[in-house]
Length: 260
Length: 253
Image (cartoon, rainbow over all chains, first blue to last red; front, side, top):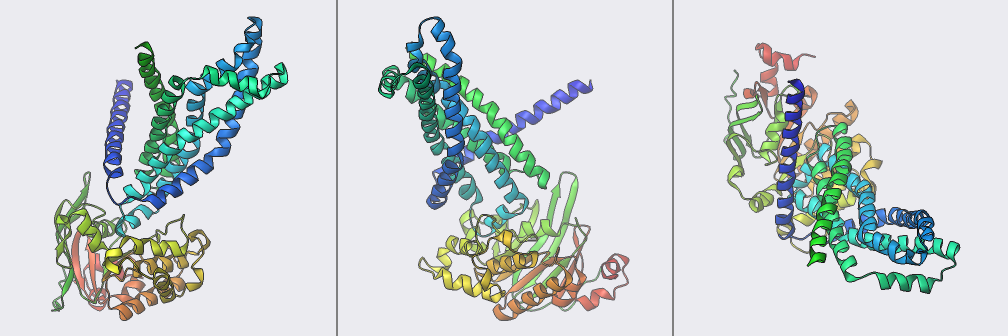
């Protein structure tokens, strides 16, 4: 009975949170198109978020490219299909691995950062101080951050993809003596707009999810330092789960378009 | 209940009538009433958790009261739209308990921030530099202009927060526990600063505190907030000699 009650309570709390998150998202879209626009703060956030995550995305992308090629090479060699390596790597990275890995890295880096920053501002009454001074804190803090991640993530994904493919080329160059021109001409032959466009659109939604969840958790952070820690932690956990759900929906929708 | 008979004929700048606020089953304010007169220093004292901060947050629209009226300079703030409320907020300074300086901004940017939000009050071409320096000079911290809040001591933070409050040249200043968390010497310095500001700008001040020394030094009038109501109203001298045990408890040393 108590287990059933516990499940019921957790389900209720989860659904309440989903409801609140939906209202928060609705408010974001309403406020995003209303004047005044905080361009200066938006640019500052774009620079901060892009700059803060770039090195991490580059290193992760490079390692993913190396590892993917090293792991796949023996199997492709077994079937005499090693010449398919550039096509296989580029399509898998551009369509799936690049966006999801970059988004997960950014969820850890940017999402937790937003959650902790806004949470700390809430706890130390900085958000209240902003409101009292006649500034709409939702517009100044939330809209700018969500928009910045939404705009920056596709750029980071493109950079991460390029670095990953370059990492793959290095392995091929060392192990198979494949030239830069040959490798990349095969990459560009294999890639189509049908690979790049859905992945880029998907990245916008990934960015939106990271920003919305990070801001939601921070903006409504519970009092105390424990609340800030919880906000940062749950921002990452919740966003990671949401990213996979968005990814599944995106792949499903893309697949329908491919079939048409 | 003590009622202060010497009601002033001065203009009322802030008035709360029959204010109620509850959180769940906890009734924090049960019909609180208050009037602040122009140029007056009114201290509201109450125990921790008595609803002082809730009351002051209702007053500036940070919290919504369940019922009652809140009139600030002849405007019922419960009926104002967001834009009108923001304009009115330029005339109300708020000093937060923990200073609430923006961590990511320098002292200069902290002071410039509210100025840039109220271009209607100061005009598009305001000389922010002069106003910022003047506000910091008023609190004796002009040298800290380029420091980050993390580089300031507790007392310095409180002074900078006061400068940020002053920069909009408010008509009313609300102080939420202005001396809490400060050592006695720094607390005394803050009290002197508050008195100087009141003399220099003629502002009306509402001070929320449980520091008796602060109340004695600065109050023209006091309200004791007990059980969610304005339990006693009077001067420090009147209240400190009261025989009511609930009132006496505040003045025991």
